[in-house]
Image (cartoon, rainbow, N blue to C red):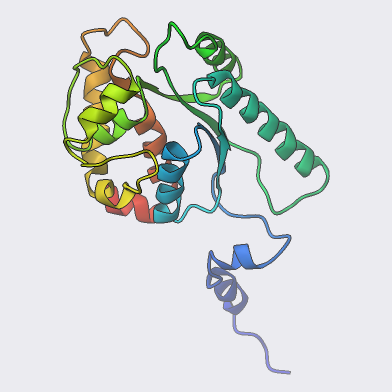
Length: 231
């Protein structure tokens, strides 16, 4: 029997494609694993699902809690998903990873009528969940792709009307990711700048502001192609 050349086995291992992990049951997926729980059924999950596909991130799990205006339901769902994942791992599942970070995505809207907001923030902080909070609404992240502004908005409806200056006929179900992706780094820079120099700088979630860019940056850092594309 001919002898195997030194190093031949190692070469075959390294030539295995990343996609093969998805095709073979029982194999552990590579890379960091994060959980994103969104409030609402369309805007936030549509954006993050598009970004996940764009960055080719198979280990990002997105869950929806369709109760607009109830941030506590987002944090509760995050807890439920973590418990389920931990139980699956205890049951011997080898094709999944523990969540290395957990993100709760929700809006401030009108804090005087949003009675679960403070409780949701407190519970998220207690559990070391990351927050991607927008004030007043997620669409402020979209606006930052086009302009930097610290003009306050009365509510999400007023903010969406302002967004229509940039995206005419905008509606929450409208797919906008393709028109935004090229300006992602601009939006990140605007979001950082606003939080650093906001007139309401003493507040954690000033109006207007968003922390969505922190989650977007984490997803980019998880993706080799994303790091190359957005550097």
